Length: 154
Image (cartoon, rainbow, N blue to C red; front, side, top):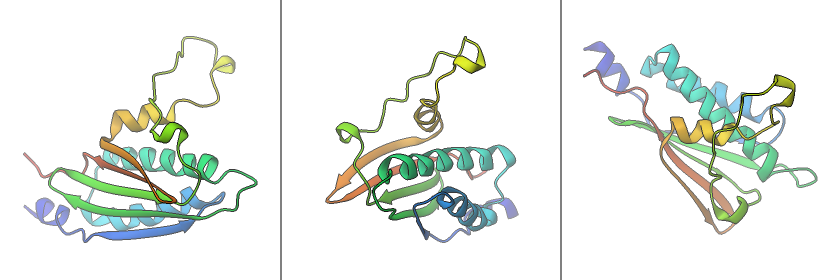
């Protein structure tokens, strides 16, 4: 039962990075390092990396677009029996219509050169994350979600 004990050993933690070209890479490195005690499998690490990278890249590109000055991106994380809980916040521009994009699947039955530039990220986030919510509080965007990783063995 060492795996179960290791997976419950994660203390809640927070990460703050400054928006910019290296923000996603920096935050992901810090996040994955902090999650190492959970002994996540390769597929679970990929889920965390994909969802968080998509969210962070969206923040850098859309919440803090040029010419707006960069700002903080904050990630709070804790582990529970139902998975990894993340709260991601920034002080950038609000989401359009104060809602998370629908993230509809894109049509991919066409040549690679004709595929759209974007539109895949929110589909992936919505597909992999659970309990996704978005709020705009004062001047802050906040997304809460749960990733079903690091679950106790059945």
